[in-house]
Length: 228
Image 1 (cartoon, rainbow, N blue to C red):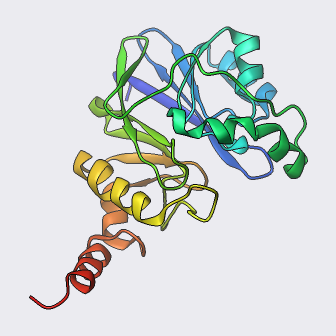
Image 2 (image 1 turned 180 degrees about the horizontal axis):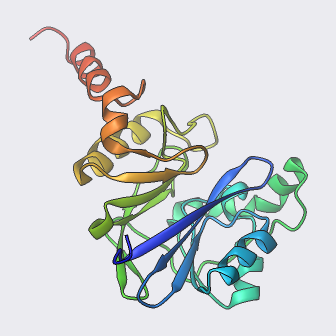
Image 3 (image 1 turned 90 degrees about the horizontal axis):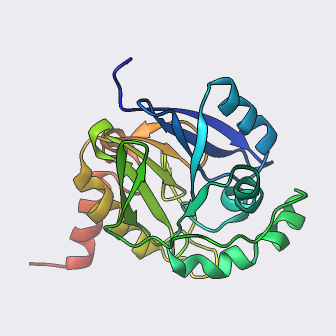
């Protein structure tokens, strides 16, 4: 809608087709690039075509496909980097190694301008976004939520029909399930862009996601609580 406070486009980047999401304040045309893993020329070209200016770089977590281009993007735009939570520093330190493994040149360690904590807020133009710390895929993963639009960028916490992997160092399946059900589900029927793949909504995932649908969680709780 023309009067919407934010708009966005999604650019799959890197060989892992990670969703680099560009959101902007429609009143100011100030944009945030969420998870700039790579392919910056294409992303910046589309930003320029739309007449936007890069004001913020937001990082959901420290994996290379999400953050490998953050250092270069800051150099090219002067934008402030916000996120992730400080518990992902060890992943940020590993970005160059991961880049070599993926065969992607130029992935670099970055220094954030602001670590984010659960309950923080960040601003973009005239919009304000809420931060939810959702560990499990990585210990320092955060989610960016714009309440007036019922929109979130959830990184690799949640996907259409799936959830993030928890077999990486310091991953934790129970933490991830807890973060989704106690921090994301109470937000209501939110439309979200995941770190990979198509958009979905919290309502749809509560209906059919094989890992975190309401019926799956209820069954799990019944099995762990034992007889009454």
